Image (cartoon, rainbow over all chains, first blue to last red; front, side, top):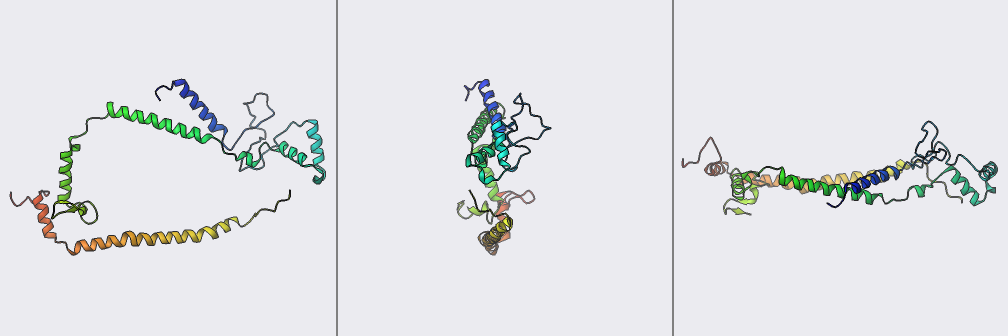
Length: 176
Length: 76
């Protein structure tokens, strides 16, 4: 734990943040921009989302000539389309199928790893605190004074019916 | 590739018809179990304690132990 350099911790945090952003149910898949990270939010967008089955636009906007001729054939009776053509038309409109969208990822390992790392760091901080920050424990924590406190509680008959003093045998002077 | 049409209606009703009787039964059972496992024994414990309770004797025992400030032990 002490050998982790700051750089490695930083890259782990960056990868975890990237994983958290990319593996969620919303996935930006924009195919018509030169700079991949800049999305024009004023235009209809495509997402693969479980709760929005029909996004604002089809997945492929720029169709090749073969795709366009297939789209023309789609305007006719669908019984004449072969299975491969139907799948090709589907993939033109959608990027991932629902089973592909719902595939489990390995994100949980990153999450659990991050949790344990931060628990470990917290444990180290608490250990340092207990050595360098906390004041002396009061004398009332000594065993003799604790015994005196217990005796006083029994004398006062604290919870004599179902609780503390109910477990003490007053005739014999010992715990039941 | 012709699948049967999936069920489109009555889904909430079906879920409620299944889960509500179970929910009510379990709640009532847990309430009854709590009553007979916790409250009845507790009432009995209190009744038994106070049947044999001599308050004067207990007071004198507490007084001798020296916990009161208004009444000191009889020795002083």
